[in-house]
Every structure is written in C-alpha cells, then in structure tokens.
Length: 376
Image 1: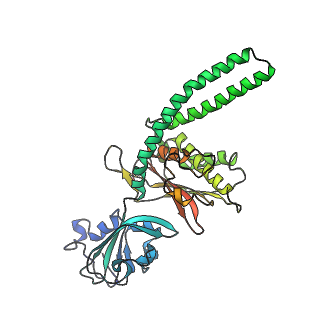
Image 2: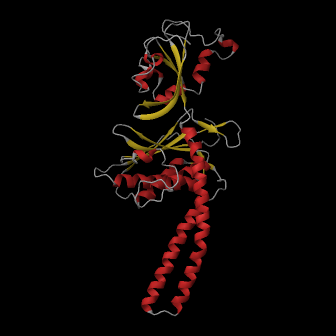
Image 3: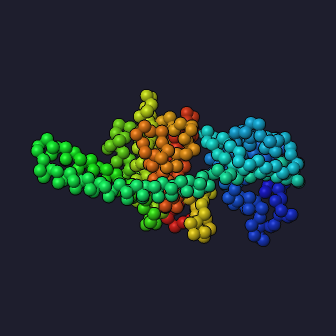
C-alpha cells in the first residue's frame, strides 16, 4: 500500500508482485471489517471500502481528518488520538458517535506499523451490541410473544363463539330495545374476533414464500394507503435510488411492515405542535451480512429502506427495547406492532433497526434486506 512519498506499507513479510496474485493493498481494500491507517498525528491516511461505508464518506473526504473526531472520541486512547504508540491497543464495546449523530457500538483495535514509526492501522469491529447481534438477542423475546399470542388466541376464541351464539338466541325473542343490545354484543364479538385473527397471523411460524420484488412499488403502495387514511395531509417524501435491484422478500409482508412504520411515524408527528414530515429512502449498502439460517456461510443484506420522521422519538427508557413485546410509549398501544415488524423482516432474512440521527435528530427505522440473487 503506497503512502505519500511512494513508500510501501508491508502488511506481511514482503509485498508480492501483482503477477503472483492479490497483494497487501488488495487484501486491505477487500477486508469486510472497517480499517483505517492513521499517521503519527492521528489523521486518516487510508481507509478501506468497509470504513468508507461506516463513515458514509469516500477516501478523499476522510483523508487528513483526525480519527478521534470521526468516531466522536475526543479523549480517545493515544493510539487513536494521535500520540505515537508502539504497542497494540484494544478497547471493547465503545460507543462511537458518527456523523450525522449516529451511535455505533464497536471494538477498537490498533496495531503499530513498525516500518513507519507513529503510524498504525485501526480496525473498528461491530461489538456484541452491534446491529446483527441485537437482532439475535431480540429473537428470544419475539418467540415468547408468539407463544403468548397463540395461547391467548386459542383461549379467547372459544368463549367468544359461545357469547355470539347466545346473543343470537336472545335476539330471536327480544323486543326492539333488547335487539339493539344483542346486535351490539354480536358486533363487538365480531370486532374482537377480527383482532384475534390478526393476532393469529402474528403467531404463524411457517416460512414465507419469498421472491424477487420491486421495493419501490411496495413503498408506493404503502404510501398511497397511508395518504388516503392515517397520514392524510402529512407530506411523505421519497428519496429513492432508482438503480436498486429487486429485493428478495414477501410482498404482502413487506407492505404490512411499511404501513406499520408509516403509521408509527404519523402518530409520532401528531404528538408535536411543530408538525413535520415523513421521508422514505432507499439505498444500496455494501458490507452488511448475517449468518445464514442453515449455517451455510453469510447472507449479504445490501438493500436499505428507511422510514424517517420528524417526531420526538420514544422515551430514553424504552428506546433500547422497542422491538421487545408489550413495550410501548403509547397510551392506547399494545406493544406488539414493532415486534411484528421485526418478526416479518426476520422471517425474510433481514434486519430492522431503530436510531435517532441527524441535526436536529430524527427517528429512523432502517430495514436491511437481501437482494434477489443473493449477491452483495
């Protein structure tokens, strides 16, 4: 890897000629872990593709910037902040603040480059609290909610059918005033039964039939539903990558997920006096992957869909548990909406994440999904 002045950083004992196969620079660029090379003053001199994705900036924009400032650690260890360090350094489960106000937990590992005193290579590993592992941690809570919902659905529907039948018998011999009451009973029983049917959909653990889908058509359909109902009068902006390939997913489930997130966004905006807008975005992101369900390697999740709103976000006390069952800040909420969103996205092999980003901060629900064909 060439440095200013034409010298070469050797990541091994010797640099192989290009004719013999990939060299150290190729390995550095292709590593899935974000890697940056910093000089004796702690300023970035090189960054691989994974680091560019992490910082959402290209190599030219990162070059010369202090690494400590990029990761939001003003009081970072000397190995990061710019004081020459000749020994390896590691810090685990550190909370980084990346522009624009993105929070990211990671492990930092720095190793000196002996042939270049003061220079070091820094790896930024996603920690145990990273996006992928938080997904796994939530799995147990989701299964608990599924089991509870299945039990409730079974136990409630039996007496409901008896209540409805009794109301019909009473209606056959009731006077006019009583008929109105029996009809009210039947209507309410039918309404509760419909809710139970929806709960039973939540308990369905069968594999979804996924196929190539146009994510922009799905977003457009969900947006029309929102604008004709719960989000009437609210601006819903669209910032799409038109070159995005088809996503591998289940159409109806994806529509349901987007509608649920749009409804949450509309309700959040309604709690503020200043109003606001909802923004739908799509992008192609390299480097994010999860372990395959059957253990056959890893599955890339390059397709990103975001539902962003100008609302205040959830209270700090529940922000870390939004996808857990029965957790909600709404007075009329049941706390299963986001759990259902997480389940449906997980059933399609994807990830859903919550964050507060930007200045002023906005609420972001980010879906990371596989592309049709399975290639990054």
